[in-house]
Image 1 (cartoon, one colour):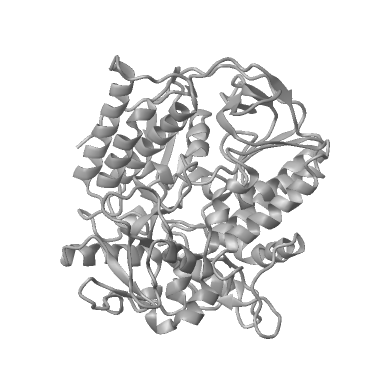
Image 2: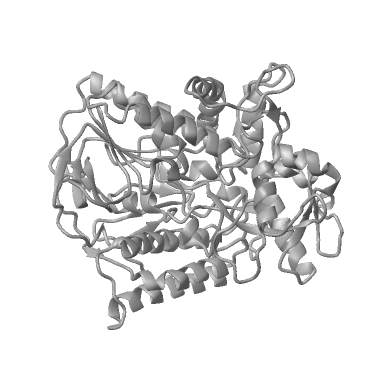
Length: 560
């Protein structure tokens, strides 16, 4: 079976910029990676522009419940953390990238504390450490029991707010970055970063579509949750960074490795959008998984039972749901007691109570939903992409740390470590005189197009049906065909409106990421980590390599 050729727009259709500004670096995103990069750059280059899609505190980081994995226990070692990460990564993690993560991670966490983050303490006053799935040691730092991301976001946003009036930094909220601008190709055909176009919602001099010209753009735009029908990601996670990077000519990789969190609150078959997460840490503290008939099933699946890596648990749940003809399984924590649950997991306890669930008295219905994306913009160890001047950090990046599956609580750590590295690299290049003014942007070949916003629900359903937890060649080919039809409808049907506006820009990003992800998943004929093929259920050593996706000059999709 051969999939038909696919072609993408190389830019989003949009009005001409009504304003222009020139800065030394643009940071896109206000999660842990974007805020860290902006804070690190602020005193190292003359002018930084921080752009965020919502308010400063609206990044995905604020939703992180579990914690940050770091070796802070004298009995633990970076080597042990490295090995746990490699095991979870299913043979595809880059050992050099993982070594950077585990060796630099502890110092980055200490810097986070110095920036005001307050983590939970143990009886002796030291930072309390817990354990999550895939870790063989207690190394998870958490705050407010199950509100680590909220505390990290609070501390970093406070640092940014303290310097908001500094002339060296400009903060633009409620702004959607449309495209990464690039220069004319050099003699070797290389296009350099020239800045971004963005649409600012609201009033003021930065209202509407504008252009920020800069020799450096750092993408920290988060995940792709809205590519699927249900996710733990916020509504703004529409894959904007990956799509914009592809349109600019960057290589992306590991798109097929999507982490479906095993324990997301099941709210019924029709539930969609952002769903409440029941943290991995709940199983770390002793939560048990039961099927709807009350049988515990994980001990027969993996030696670590409920603490097995997330992909193992998610696949086991899907199989158990099929075996019992059920839409969910049950997470049982009744044995932990009301007092412990309310103290260790106050946020989850309150959220469940709002929905009429007392988890100290009854098991919680859960099922897998999209949670994290291990793939993204391929970078080196300093966060540099294949496009000169374009960096990617955090979930939008593919550093090689996660491989086929992210180890629990490595995501916030990766954002910290690689945002610091990217900012340091930019600062060193600036100090060496290698970053002058931005090159003049030119229009890329390949044209512009938009997918109508009304098509998004069809697109999401196609992805969940055929490119979700369990895939086959037939399901992926069917998904690709349905995606192609969605785009055709958006372009050809007279009653479908696809005017240049926020919902259409986001839906076009969702479409491009969905189609590229589906093509990568179709090509990988094995099961590994967050990619499970029912028609190729075993891991194949010949597939210990990365699937790369890029666009040619005319927008043709290349998957190799």
